[in-house]
Length: 406
Ligand code: HAM
Image 1: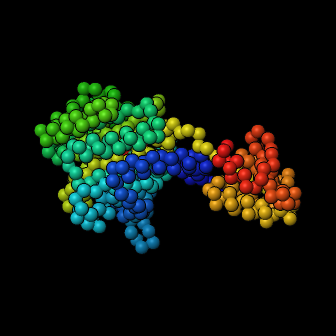
Image 2: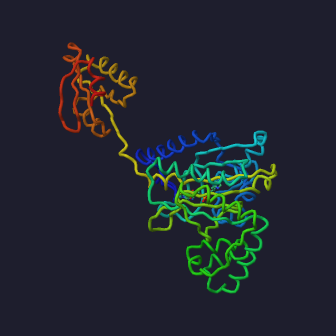
Image 3: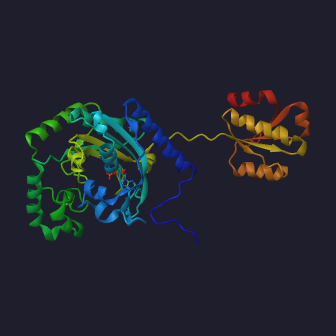
């Protein structure tokens, strides 16, 4: 039996329409902020994610859909968009223009354990602002996200921010954490015991261990990172409510300085609606120029779920012909309705009235237009409201006005 893969989904009408609404809202904000679309390939060399996302991350260690292609290349389905943007930036010499904002919309793949709101194929809408090291850039991208959420009526979310420092100040913090957690190893969850040496920062945001160790060491930022963080906060003050969370560390290796998450205020584990941060060393570490960058990605399905959509209006008309002599007349009406931009269907003219009306109901049409020889002769149609059941004969010329008036 044909069967869907675990963690993958078919998205039908309403769910698909909601994702489109999220995309539309994001596109509007991207336009205002001058971000340009970048359509990235789904498949990249696996090493790009190993280098960028990071060897020690859960994504690279166990969640990638990676395989050898027919040509013996090790490739991976993209688990996130940032490494692809960095690769495209380097390959296309985008640094010729020092300031660039790119956005992307596309499906990502992670072999995670499926849960509500956590899928193995999901859509991300992402934004990468490359070339601006100033704290104003961090604030700007955070505010873009806030504006998208506002457009979509997403409420009850929290913005958490933190600074995880840079190459200068992070090694000491890392070492402090290793020392602290090594003395507590037996109290750590199984995952954190293995994480401890490779990625001790992740212990802080572990759902099990994070809250247990409130006395864990905290990051001491170097003066440059501290100044940067203070300025980001100053820019955001009064524009978006945010919380500084010293345990917010993010699960990807490339971040420097500012990291942030927009979290839904709901019970349950899957609460990150969007997340991002600064990654000043990523592009140079991938063989490109030394350019600073900051960005984020939102999970389109999660945001769609948190959004307050007005009921997506469906207005559709089903055209029915009850006599062969009226078929051409009916067909022209059908095509004219479509030309006017109305959603119209029908054309089952080889079926009787009952069968055509049954299909009109199945298709969830809210109006039927019924014609026969009489209507052709008088140049009229019968317009039936399928919700109220009311029907009336109107002149063909009035048909479009009838819909505009309604
Ligand atoms: P991320 O935190 O891995 O960051 O993912 C961003 C968002 O994608 C999450 O907050 C969540 O809404 C959504 N998401 C992640 N995994 C899943 C899943 N399995 N199912 C459904 N939604 C999911 C990144 O990917 C970075 N590239 C963000 C970034 C861009 N940082 C800088 N630039």
